[in-house]
Length: 171
View (cartoon, rainbow, N blue to C red):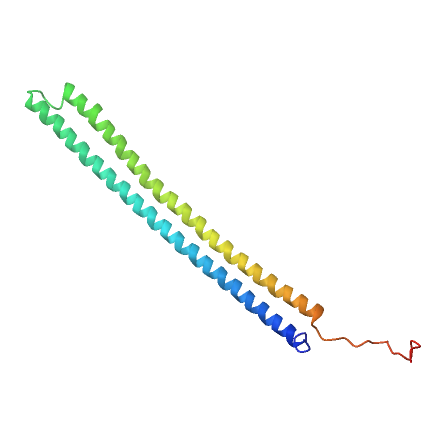
């Protein structure tokens, strides 16, 4: 009933408001998709960083192994038993302990990269959901406002019941 008796200008205004609401929802969907893509990218970057840390840990172990072999070879070449006494202490305290500590650090960094990326991705997905919710609220508000405006100024005219010029002494 509201639209049927409405003026052409009111109908155009309602149509434009409906179009605006649809565009607000589309923008919300696009923003949500953008955040989803950014979340996926954050996860991939986190995995890439974790792989780099894993590779660094492998290199630490290789270098530690080479250094231990070098300590043993030097001790043996000098006529010492490489598995006891000073050569063993040098291998343990100067090579093995720092190597293990570096390896543990790389493993922690690997884990931190995954955890950080996961948290960032989660935040981005939530931002996408919030963008969509905001778009739906905006669209609903736009449509409600248009309906209220049309009902207030552009709706059908009401007959003046009870008013007649003759009964008011005007006729």
